Length: 266
Image (spheres, rainbow, N blue to C red):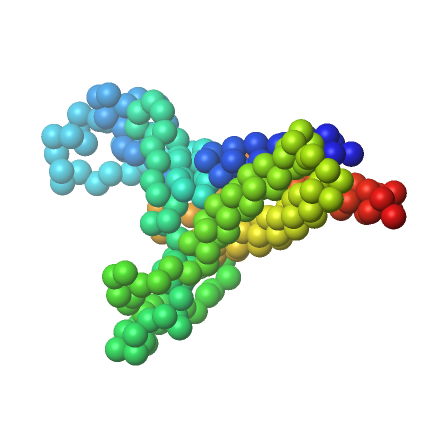
């Protein structure tokens, strides 16, 4: 049981670290307007009037295109993690990335209770259309620089603490497995390993849920040039919850081993 608990804890640690540093928590497509055709771009573009030379030399010509509806748009692939959001570059090969922290709405990056009173005057009301075309009323309030961070940073801090507690729990399990000199010392190490592992699992669950909330709000209220047309959870998200599952399984196994040792010792 001790070896099984160590193995599960190690898997949880590897899964959580991989999920934390990768950018595939959520992925999907973004709808962006097609660029105009030119000498260097002949495909996936809008050819106005079918005459490129006239378009370039005479600016007074009325431009028209036969493409309508979704034919006027490109659907580029994107993937997002805790730190960065990367999307396909439609004008060149490769991807371009930007900080997800900069994309998140201000309401998810700052705690209103932490904002000084002089910054709480309501701003203009803006109508924001969400992904499902629901109208969301949001008060736009300017936030001062250096404001204490909110849900997004709490999620990041919780993820870091989750990984740190997993490391502590793994270390204690290894000490109990390989360097335990007596039954009493082994029981103490076992108990502390179980406590740290349970705490790490709870922190991980909260961190994953907070990030999911931040992403869903960003989908509705984020920058217009970033909002997804369609999206789903990616393999990093699956790794994160797989890590949580392994963590809780390791804690249950450790507690079971502790209980069995106590009963046998008595």
